[in-house]
Length: 256
Image (cartoon, rainbow, N blue to C red; front, side, top):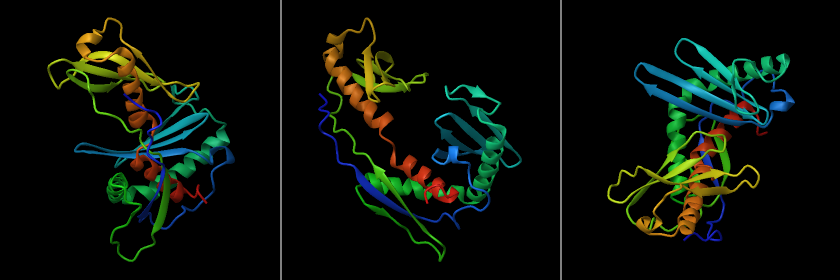
């Protein structure tokens, strides 16, 4: 059902964004922190408003949450275990926290508008447009360039009934394929897919006891289809994620 050679080509996408005056001032990050994965989320539910900043490195992570009246942070070690203690030496940790505080102070006032622009830019990217730009007042603008991997071309679900997916707990980022013969609210797990740490490719397995005749497709075809689904939805980075990370790196002076 899924031909792995049917990949759309990778594309270069550019977004013109208002990031303020970049990069942030102050001391640079220690060398060990020069190539992080960065992300930010804004939670704006009434009564529970905060921004979450994620800084991930090969040997640990720093997660920071900032609300109207406080900044809280915690760490994860190289095995992704939660910890109140830093996995890095004290001097490096102090430098990282100082840099992160300055990054947050720069980003936070413009975060709502920036996230709206990034989401809109990602929509333009999904439409096949190569550049995103909108009208801004006369302000310094930055051109953020990202490489977007092409999706695997897939057929829709051709089996019986209805399917959906659900995220599962696990370091290998597993998801379950859910199926129901009659209702769109699929609720029966029939397979699981995850990222193979050795190969870097999706892997899958069927759930024992699945009635493949009722599903309407052979087990092998369902697993191949689900691995393609996993590749598109879990492995290939979303354009908005790429743009957010690149914008944060530009603000922090990590892409120069």
